[in-house]
Amino acid sequence: MMRRLALVAVLALAFFAGLVADRSASAARRAASRPYRALDVFADVLGHVESSYLEPVDERELVYGAIDGMMARLDAHSAFMRPEVFEQLRDETTGEFDGLGLEVALEDGVLTVVSPMAESPGERAGLRPGDRILAIDGASTHELGLAGSIRRMKGAPGSQVVLEVDRAGFTAPQRLTLVRERVRTQSVDLRVLDAGRGYLYLRVKAFQERTDRALAKALADGREALGGEIRGLVLDLRNNPGGLLDQAVRVADAFLAEGIIVSTEGRDRREVEVQRARPKGTEPGYPMIVLVNRGTASASEIVAGALQDNGRAVVMGTQTYGKGSVQTIVELEDGSGLKLTVARYYTPRHRSIQELGISPDVVVAETAPAVPAQPPPAERDLKRHLRNEAAPVPASIPAPAAPEDFQLRTALDYLRATDVLRGGPGARGAATAPKRQ
Image (cartoon, rainbow, N blue to C red):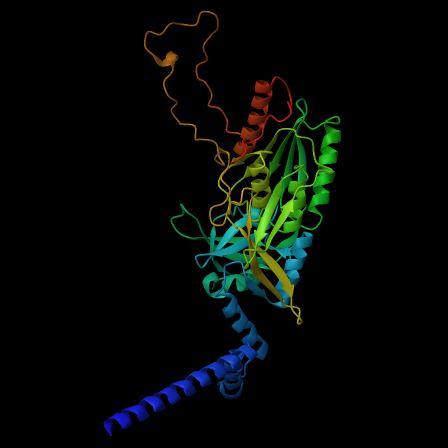
C-alpha cells in the first residue's frame, strides 16, 4: 500500500511539474508576443494617478518625466529632449542659438562644463572645462538633471541668469551672473602666424553643418595670404566640444591621403563601420601641429586621434576630455527628440579614448611656468666676480613676460625648430608624429 501511495505521489508531482512548466512556457510565449508588456504596469500607474491623485496632473509632463527617468538609467550622454530643447539643439548644429554658449555633461551626477564656446557669454565669464555648475538661478542642477539644466540656461537674449560654480582650488562655490545672448559661432577662425616662414593658424571651434566648407575656404584664404604656399599649420582644437561626426571625418580627410580615420562599433561587435581617407583634394604634407586640452571632446578627439595615429601631425597640449561614444538623434512625432548612445568609436589604431582621452605627443601646460619673484643666482650675484669690461651691466634684468597663449607660442617655436633641423623654412614633413604601433 505504501509503495502504491508513493507511486501516486510521484505521478502527481510529475503532472504538477509538467503543468507548471507548460504554464511557464505559455507565459514566456505570451511575453515574447508582447515585448512591451511592462507598459501595462506603467499604464496602470498612470491611470491611478490621473483618476485618484489629490490634485489635477498634466499627463504629458507625467509621461515626459517617466521618459526622463528611463533615460537616467542609461549613460550620461543619452537624453530625452522636450520639443523646445530639441529645437534649440537643431539651432546649435547650424551655429546660432540663444543662451550662454556652454557645452555641459553630467559627471558623477554633477553638471560639468565640457567646454565654453568661443566668444560666448560663458567664455567671457571665465568658465573653464571641468567647472561644476551646482545651481542655476537657485535651482539645484542635481535635481534639474541634464535636460532641465539646459532648459534653465537657455532664454531670451538680454535676460540674466545666475550660476553657482565650483572649481578645484575654490575655497567655496562662487556665483556668476551672465547675460544670455544670441550666440553665433563661425566654426573656423584663420590667422597668419608667421608670414615669412609661411605658417598658418586655424581654429575649429565646433563641428557644425558646413564646417568642412569653412575649413576649405580658410585654407584657400590662408594660402593666398602667404603668397600661394602653406609651409606649416597649427590646427587648434582646444575647447572644441565636438558636434557632427560626418564633419569631423571630412576635416580629418582634408589632411590625410590614405588610411583609416575612425571606426565605430555598435551593440553587435561584428558590425563595424570604418571611415577611410580619400586621396582626392588632400592638403600637401606640410608640418602640422594639433593643439588640444581638456575641452577637446568627442568629434574633435576623432580628428586629433586620426591625425596622431596616421603620423600626420604632432598633437600638443594636455589630455583631452575622453568621450569615445557616438550618439544618434531621433525626432519624435510630437516634436520632442531622443539622443541615444549607439556605438563606441575607435582611432585608426583601434584605441578607445572613452574615459582616457587623447594623450598628446608633447605635453604643454596651458600657462607658462611661473617666473619666480627672486630669480636664481647668476654670475653677477657672486662676490668678487669679474666685471664685463666690454659692456655696462644693467642695474636689474627684467623678468621675461609670459606669452599671451603659451601653448600656441610653444607650437610656433616647435615649427621653427623643425625648420632649423630640416635645413630651411617649411621643410616638408618636418612636424609629424611617430606612427603608433
